[in-house]
Length: 101
Image (cartoon, rainbow, N blue to C red; front, side, top):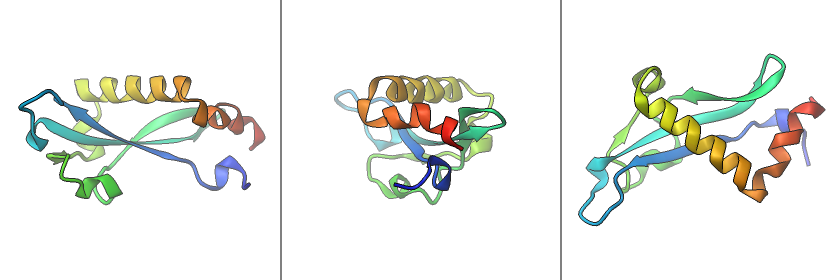
């Protein structure tokens, strides 16, 4: 397996309403990159355009980084990504991998 820094993962999140009666128009794609920033790992918002989920019929809006930064959806996306990282055992390697770089 390569070092974690060889390819940092991206998190693509479809955020919005999923209840009955909701449609793609109610949901937006926000993308984050998990990487080493200075001395610790962190999430960084990136443009969602060009990411594979951008073509999904589940997504109504594909957001650029500039459309997310400073908006409430940014805090939602970061909270979701943090929760996934902390709770999904398949991602445990990421939590310690930054120490190997």
